[in-house]
Length: 392
Image (cartoon, rainbow, N blue to C red; front, side, top):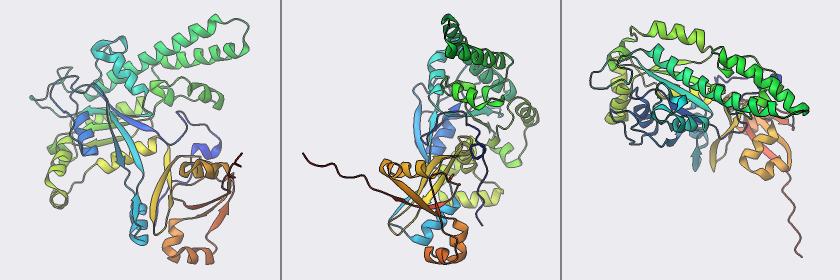
């Protein structure tokens, strides 16, 4: 049975923070030497530098990571297509921030600009002690580290909002600028209270305006806790309780995922069969799939399927996307000439085995322009192709 999320803010008419569209990216963020590049290496299977000194990573590394999906795998097995295309999540490895980054410390302005270019954040903190892996703050304290990153993102947002507010106040007699100034005042009050933009309540009008500012604390986040192999296998660490309490209080709704860079590196190096045996003997598993899925969901991304003997493909869209917009991810002509979409669920296909069986059971439906696509829909788009231009 497929378990798919069916309700979302977009269904209720609530606008979402962030850029519209489906080409959204996650950035790996944290202090130096907490395991960001090690995580990126294991996610991407690429060999990027992961050295024991601050600012080893300067220009952000980029990778497209397949999004794990058991339904997609089942569809591939069923259709045995010539081409199999999963959903992908784009992830950037961003250099380590330090205290004072918002004021330019440690190339902070450059690195903060890299965060501004992504749509969501993996906050990485470490809870392992290792004398050979230096800590820029000279001790291991994940709550302090997370607080430093939050304070730097908040400080940068305050700078940006103050600059916009100053510009808006200079314009006299303009109702639009006056309304913007009022919203900027509210935004500034929220930031100065220590609250991230994503954790405050906003009207649709305010969200529409916020989305033009590209503020760092508006970006959804996932907290990743890098543990030693020993602590990861035992599922405990002396720092975890305080860290969980801090996140629940200051970063509500931001999920926390423990992982071990050491474990993930080992599993990558020993190969698939040995990795499966290692996981079974240690009663453990890789956290990478969970990390990728958490980032995908925090960006409010879902996907629908197109299926056939030629290809089974996942098409990534933002939650709340209507059928014509989904058609447009396949080809812009499909959106322009959209007629309807034939839609059925994977559960219906499992039950009735073939598309004709689904249709005979009345489980295939035709949906029009107002239909909001659901995660895991199987779709076939009908559209009028564009008319050929007449030759002169």
